[in-house]
Amino acid sequence: MLEVNTLNVSYGNVQVLWDVCLKVDEGEIVALVGANGAGKTTLLNAIAGLVKPASGSVTFLGEDITGYSSNAIVERGIAYLPEGGRLFPDMSVLENLEMGAYLKNSWNKRNERLEKVYEIFPLLKERRKQLAKTLSGGERQMLAMGRSLMSGPKLGMFDELSYGMAPKLVMEAFKMLETLRDNGITVFLIEQNVKQSLEIADRAYVLENGEIVSGGSCNALLESDHVRKAYLGL
Amino acid sequence: MTSIINILVNGLILGGIYALTSVGLSMQYGVARIFNIAHGEFIMVGAFITWMLYTSFGINPLLCLVVAGPVLFILGFIVHRYLFKTLKDKTPVPTAFEGNSMLLAFGILFIIQSLGIYLWGTQIKGYSFMAYSIYLGGIRFSANRMLILFFAVFLCVLFYLFLTRTRPGKAIRAAAQDPEAASLMGVDINKMLALCFALGAMMAGFAGVLLSMAYQLQTNMGLPYTIIAIIVVVLGGLGSIPGSMLGGFILGIIGSIVNTIDPGLTLAAYYLLFMILLLVRPSGILGR
Image 1 (spheres, rainbow over the protein chains, first blue to last red):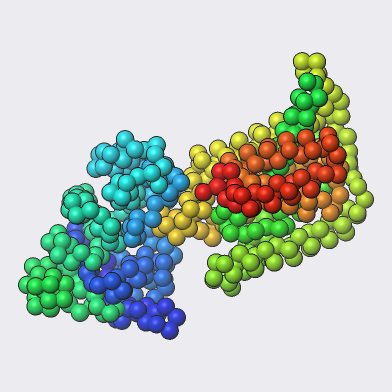
Image 2: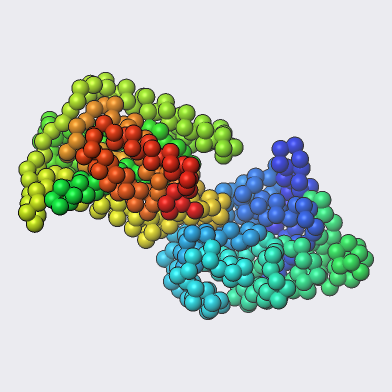
């Protein structure tokens, strides 16, 4: 579904990503794990069209989308939930969700999609008139996830879903990802929270200093010496 | 009693015009980060289009709203597309863009003003339209000014509904709060910025049409209106549209009160208020 081929990204003279290759197949939950500063967010930004890669390509459903603008990429069916959710603080819960369905095709279907999102997150329905900035951390994350569903994406990319969340909420957030998959959305998440993301994902890649150092099934990674030592403290 | 009501009504009329001139500027700054010093020139163009159409062709000034609005929308769109957009591409640092856009707006101010002088000269212009009195509850009001108040409020409310109820309106507000997140929703930011600037110019044009019905016109009238709009925008809170509307009416009423003491003191009173505000509450009444 999503294929990243020998992608290189630089900020000025500093190269952040080096020949990154990975793929995500339909119906999978794939995690990209790595330490802070490894280049995880940069990779998502490059896929989502917020950063232009220096070389390499990104292919989605067989179409080369390298260098497309971010709005063109949403249109192709990729929803990106950036770190911290990036809600519109002075808009209501409902308006935030509506913005998720901004694209013409989605806008006409916004009411059915709204019902679906309310079904998955009933709390959002209760809070629909509240301004986003008045929500608690967990509710915000819920709204951010709900908003990313409003475009009717085929692939959802989630950046640090667990960031700043209480441990109990982290489990819930990860469970939501499974709900999304059950609703036909392929999930690509990036996480510092290595253990839990490896437990929930089907496959994972490990990114270190801008390079993919290993990848494979999560079970295999959980057993590998390198991952155990570097990320699980075992 | 009668005089108090008169002062208030005059304040509301002035306030309506101020509100109308400020919402556009507020949005241009709030969304596009352009501090448009040339804003008043769009008001001047709107006013002179109306004067020209009325005195040369006898076209009803109210009909001019439908003419001047689109003309200024297109003018604003072109100015953004070919000047501010190009500047933005050349200055990627946001703070540098804010400074440079103000300098660019200065240039636009002088160019539009010079063209205005070339076309319409420097003399004071004016025309008389609905220049009769109407009596409400025994108090005398001038008909054209009441019309101005009505349309100013009507257009402000329409603009507010556009921003809060429609798809492009919501996109404009989202882009003001977080442009990058808005683009992840599929909003074409460049298109939105051009739309914002064009709408701001259109609102200025509407203000020009309305004020030409009761006030004198001159090709150098733009800058004072820009300055008043800046005061109103700061008063209401930068980027807050309801704040600008409220700020416009507050300033209008203050202006009307000071005007009864001595008309020459009005601008001084505005500046005094502006300075106090900057020192005491720089975020404005409804600012964040």
